[in-house]
Image (cartoon, protein in one colour):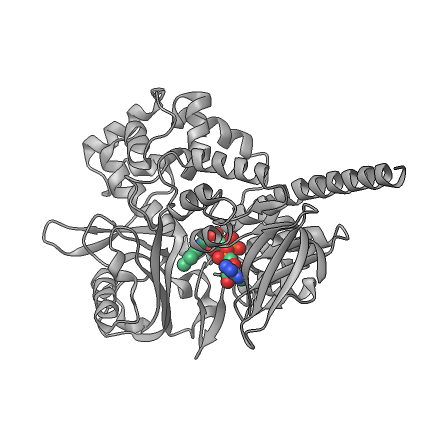
Amino acid sequence: MKEFDILILGAGIGGLSLAHRLQSQGLKVAVIDRNENPGGVISSSYKEQYQCEFGPNTVLLKNELRNLVKELSLEQLLVKPSKKAKKRFICQTADNGKRKMTSVPLNPLKLASSSLLSASAKFRLLAAVVPRRRHCDDESVQRFMSRHLGKEFTNSVVAPGLSGVWAADITQLSARSCLPNLWKLEKDHGSLFLGLAKTISKRRRKAKPEIVSFGGGLQTLTDALSRKLGGYYKEHSVEQIERLSNGSWSIKIKNLKNQREELVESTAVVLTSGQSSTAKLIKDFAPKTAKTIARIPSSSVGILHLAYNKKAVRHPLDGFGCLFDPQEQQPLLGAIFNSSLFPHTAPPDKHLITCFMGGALNPENFKISEQQCRDKGIETLGKTIGALERPVVVSGVEWPNAIPNYPLGHHRIVTEVKNFEFSNPGIFCHANWLKGLSLNDRVAESEALANRLLVFLQSRRASYQYKYKRSAHG
Ligand SMILES: Cc1cc2nc3c(=O)[nH]c(=O)nc-3n(C[C@H](O)[C@H](O)[C@H](O)COP(=O)(O)OP(=O)(O)OC[C@H]3O[C@@H](n4cnc5c(N)ncnc54)[C@H](O)[C@@H]3O)c2cc1C
């Protein structure tokens, strides 16, 4: 039986960045993934003359990710968004039923003159300087934001913004777990405005995190990590995990090409899989935690890449993209104007737009493989951007249950998972359904987990040596 120090289930950004950290410490690491290609949900490729992202499109380059990019010598391949694409739009439905894109002022002072909010909503925002302490251990994003910034701002700006990230219903999303920085600001300062003002003045002294991608798309990052790893079990699935009497773990893996099964042994096992896959693997030795994990809700998203002749679109699309109100019964969550953001992704006379469809409030709309669903998305986008002709559908993909939605009280699930890891030494959960959805969060979590794993392996080796000495001395 092959033996490893650490077996990592999943070759997404979480698994690969963790493997990279551990391998550089000289540990024997195995990575296993059922897919043919590395990257998990990250997948970039050319379709005709268009460079398409099938999962995430951009990443916020914070410290941990910046360091990883440096270590992999990928800095030269980073691309920054075009300066012409700074605006962020929100789609609003006017009184006459027409859809229009309104630019969201990035400067709070400019909000005063924006048509995005009513006079009373703008006035309500001023009251955000008043400290508002909470009296509960968690509340919905909707309640938290309304308490600080008012209902209208929350519904018109926050709901579309967060729905573009979490594809969720913000009345069901945990503020404590989804907005940990704002939650802490409230705890420390009472008022979000005062807290933000203080952190912004501190941050001015540090490098500002930037939104970036790579010339070859985000997959450049996971491809580089996979090359550095030198090889892994691709197209293999983890079927079963069992504890051995020596405290290590026996893992049954299956080659999905020839259906052959093999047992490997590892001192530690890291699970980066989604809720249902993880629950299935641990249910025999932790049935209660398996049920808890399986119950964490998630939303399904469909991605549609559309190409338009620039001449046939009235709006200049001079921004990052447009977010849609999830409360309105329409199919789109958001649209990224890829060719405005990164001009190299399309020929100069074309617009490439990535539409995100579905989400928790309109779940059936993620099925972009169905003509009717695609048509609804195309029609909504067309009316919003002023399209004069039908676009070419370049490609698309469906992601069922791909985005976890941290429910109210999610911090208690995190505690339960910690207790589960404590009672099953050597098993670690490292997944976006637990803590941190963004690519940056996943890389930062890998750093933290690598340190915990090193301590764990050292303590295991020390206890082996102690037992070995005791048995050698009778
Ligand atoms: C459509 C979409 C758009 C997004 N957009 C952004 C964005 O713009 N910016 C951003 O920062 N984040 C974005 N995110 C979030 C971010 O991409 C993910 O949270 C992150 O990539 C998850 O990485 P991961 O390694 O934890 O999991 P995954 O990428 O899901 O990898 C898990 C891997 O485990 C494998 N696996 C599971 N079970 C088994 C098994 N039993 N045996 C073998 N292998 C198994 C799977 O095949 C998969 O490859 C987006 C997510 C989605 C779905």
